[in-house]
Length: 262
Image (tube, rainbow, N blue to C red):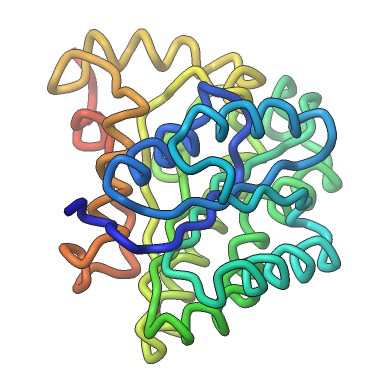
């Protein structure tokens, strides 16, 4: 049996095959989880449906349109999950967005609207999705929430700008949700992954340079893969991590410990 055998997992944030969320989804499926997906809008619908169709049992997978920044969409999403499954074990939050212009400016030039948008979409949706998922977690006897972050919170990454503010808010939300939802046996953690070639990362010009740095200066002298992030997510969603909550786990080949690179 897999580590997630019988668990029901909702994956929010798959955009295409390069998405970290897709790496997590395939690792979850390998370990026996039942999967449900969201897609942001019609632009992403075919991508998500085609990817889900490559997995065994895809005919039974709920695939629901949801813009998590819209309360009505979130309400409709969890009504659909409840109707199909009745309960939920795992929620994966892999949503991030900042207006492109604010990723190209110097930090002191970022717009108020850009920062507010980045925080709302990239961080507050973790709160709103967790709140909506709570009744379904309680029906399952508890649950696990996973969020994706990047170490531009403690370190400065060129051009990350408003997204760095949003990730700081996200990591704070992880800790507060962990304390708030712990009595309901809901664990909340974040994975801080190294830089991958994702759709959202493509808008940050500093990420490409970061990948080169990872390969030459991280302790393991290589960058990470989707599969490696997926395996960390499996651990955090499984009973093996039942004592782990409120943590940010680094899946970055040790780059987070490196100070001044030689």
